[in-house]
Amino acid sequence: MSTSDGNHSAGQQVSDDDLATIATQLGREPRGVIEVSYRTPDGVPAVVKTAPRLPDGTPFPTLYYLTDPRLTAEASRLESAGVMKEMTARLAVDDDLAAAYRRAHESFLAERDAIESLGTDFSGGGMPDRVKCLHVLIAHSLAKGPGVNPLGDEAVALAAANGMRGTAIPADWPEIPATTDDAESDQ
Image (tube, rainbow, N blue to C red):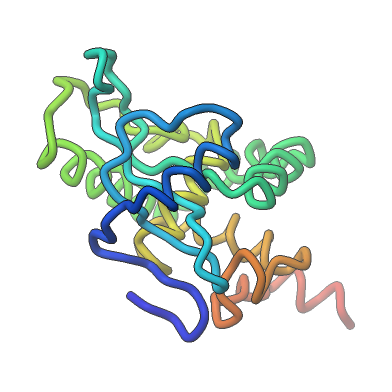
């Protein structure tokens, strides 16, 4: 999917300039980078797809890795604000949300296993039963575009609403729909 000002890719080659940018973002040399999976609206690498096994043979189950410092800081801020706990609580009571989150987990595993199977059903971010890491969920949603990972999409929308829309996140990223509780509190 490509939006008007952000790029969700299907296999962008990684240039030497990309690797240098990613190294600066991470403060270290990147490992196992297969592609740039998402670029910010201004073209900067922000999410990379990593090999399921690093060059030294170490298993690395996190398929999509968030590299943009603005996005990593925002993911950390959202985690500190208790967003993961609230999302996990919703998974326990919302069967539709839990089913959609499980589908995101299964899609993640299928994509990773198509590259190389690690022989595990661990995906990342706590999927499919809880929310453990918003960095992974945000990276997954930005790489795949809206509609694949519901809680990742929601975390991206929260980041967009916190001043990142049009800078690190596409201007047309869907907003979080208002709930019945939100509508009642506005009255």
